[in-house]
Image 1 (spheres, rainbow, N blue to C red):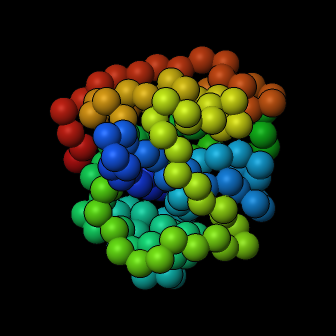
Image 2 (image 1 turned 90 degrees about the horizontal axis):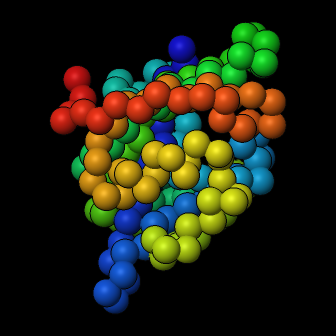
Image 3 (image 1 turned 180 degrees about the vertical axis):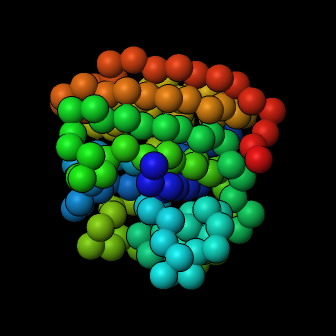
Length: 165
């Protein structure tokens, strides 16, 4: 399976936490709010999946993430999509409250901060409403999601874990 990342940034704004999401402007997931991330690519200098999360965050929104912490490993299966299109993937989800740089909109992503009680789940991937609230409550998990046409969850399995290999 293809290896990919999502990096979610958190900040305290007054007495509330906020989550940085980005509107996907082109490519896979266009028109959806999501974390930033992408595919593991050794040709771009990725030696580890954490390198991928850091590189993709810089490319997509201009920020340099420090010390990202793995919060989830999610396997996504799209049995209705031909295998040569390559939608099946393992996504390593990272959280970080430590970054530097200037937040930028790029040709791929338009970032925006959301209060945790205002996350736009209706404009996100269907699975996000399952796992995202859990990792925002400091749960670590592994999950398998199977989708049917329309990118709607057909089924899923969820397992909490203490950590990752």
